[in-house]
Image 1: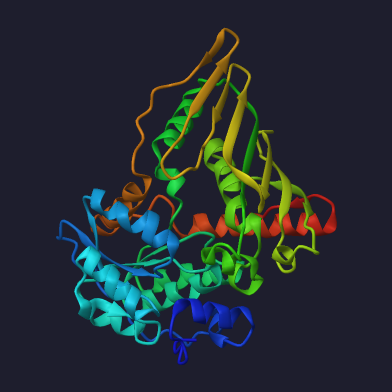
Image 2: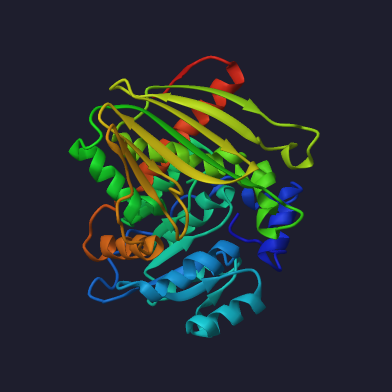
Length: 385
């Protein structure tokens, strides 16, 4: 798994893996035993910690990497890509020394680079475990995109390896660092809505693997681990957890996918799922790969309701609160959620504290997602452990 010997570009690698010819995506369970001893915390006295970005796709280039300009404690110091031309272009753009450009074959040599404190894994979900584990074995802290991994076993191994290596592991739940979402949580905790009765949360987008190369891996189960639920439904799911502050005890679900549509031969399109929480709150959620952009939730209390639409956009959010005497739109300042997330990871390393969204947060979502898939398959409620 550590040697992607025939890789000339990340896209070529992904396409090969999608055809089932690449062993590199076999899962973390096949990794060699740990050989790297735990290292002391690196560069804790620096004002900014260095990030190596693993995976230079559309999301990295257009959304995440530009956010570093607003960071107080984080900076890009290395790039990892199978495309030398792309890596060189981005290195020049972000002032990264060309000697700090790596590919998937020599990635492990990052252990010898003191300019790198944190590795940010921005790859398809099936690759998260491998590169998180390799980064930790190289003595680096890890920020990993969501979903954490396709299986509970891979998630747990990621957590275990990072703990054994004494490295921080954080999952990139950007919405938990976004001002509107944080404001919604605060209002709920203060009781502004009264006793919460129900939540609805919907996320969807059009997946277009032919028109958008960034979508190619999303319709390949071996790479994505699942369909709309794994990719966008996780926003609906995670929102219900941070809004309630509770963990669901039971799920029900229904799934529908048109298998004559080539996009959905391997992954699901529409999933409707409900979550039952210990306090009695019921959450009704949807995810879809074939509806126009929707990223919203509504929280119903016995004093008021709160609507955030869009709720998980990159840059634009709108909150509405409804009470018996009318509606209001609170004035909340937009903030750079990516920069806040990156700085939080850096501060967690600097201050030797557990990140707000550690590996256990990602593991919990994956457990619930798999329970939702099981409920949809069985057509009956499934308990969540």
